[in-house]
Amino acid sequence: MKKIGLLTSGGDASGMNAAIRAVVRTAITYKMKVVGFKKGFLGLIKDYALEMDSKSVSGIICQGGTILHTTRCPEFKEKKGRAKAIDVINKHKLEGIVVIGGEGSMRGLAELIEDSGIAGIGIPGTIDNDIFGTDYAIGFDTAVNVAVNAIDNIRDTATSHERLFLVEVMGRHAGYIAIFTGIASGVEDCLVPETISHIDILIDKLKAGHKRGKESSIVIVAEGDDAGGAFDIEKKIRKKTAWETRVSVLGHIQRGGRPTAIDRINASRLGVAAVEALKNGVTTKMVGLDKDDIAFVDLEDVWSKKKELSSEYIRMVDILST
Ligand code: ADP
Image: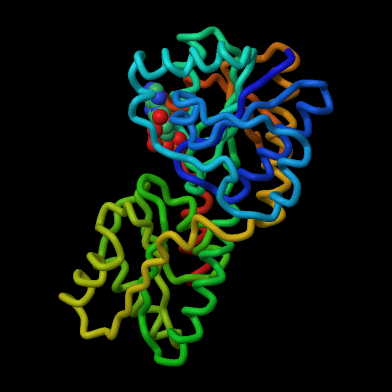
């Protein structure tokens, strides 16, 4: 294989740049050329191409976001849209492609492989970490660290004023960020989409904690919790108590920022593995981590199977807040 394409797609995640750098430098090691496409699949359709040499990825390992930029591209879901991308692939004589992105991007890659016959490997990049077939996705560790730092700050105010804080973190369909952040910052409870949330049980738990002498309470709410977002939960608590409650929605601060060492290292590992897989004739797979080992999963499994949040973590939140 002499020339491969590279793009980032879907939501951005810290560590994507480390993966870009690893793809480019691994390809150079094996005497392959890399053409980067800006703005995800849109860039592939519109030919927003740039030749990437070793220098083009200098100094990016410590930057959040993605130097290739990313978009959502509805046109790529249509065969007609992908046909334009295939013209661009042929123009550049690409034999392989690496796509860094979430579940939707892996689906887009699979459709592209099916339509064009190009070899392709996906790399999981999504802060929610809810992508099937890998224990790790790029950006998750940074997002959790950002949220933990924010909650440590909120704890100071919560304790000084003896207040209840409801902190909303990202996670429309998955509670990974909420649970990991919760365990790391020692919160009283985590409300996540994977379990049914009962406001009465939450209130009893917080009352019991107060009786034991807790000076402040922090509850993390994943944005997609079945009982609603943090503001909805606050309203429900207000109806049943006279507690002074504050809400903080962390929002987009969780996406960006300097990637943690873990995100830089794992993203680099996945980038190296993706190019080596293409070189060895592997295609139509996503490369991820099975615990700490590089593992490949069929692209189709990525969107047709659901990754479950381990009940061990859910149980731990209860035990540790006792
Ligand atoms: P993520 O990759 O973060 O899950 P999206 O679900 O928005 O984000 O998907 C990113 C892009 O992948 C979409 O904008 C589209 O270009 C492409 N994509 C998603 N689903 C499909 C599909 N079923 N067929 C082809 N392309 C798709």
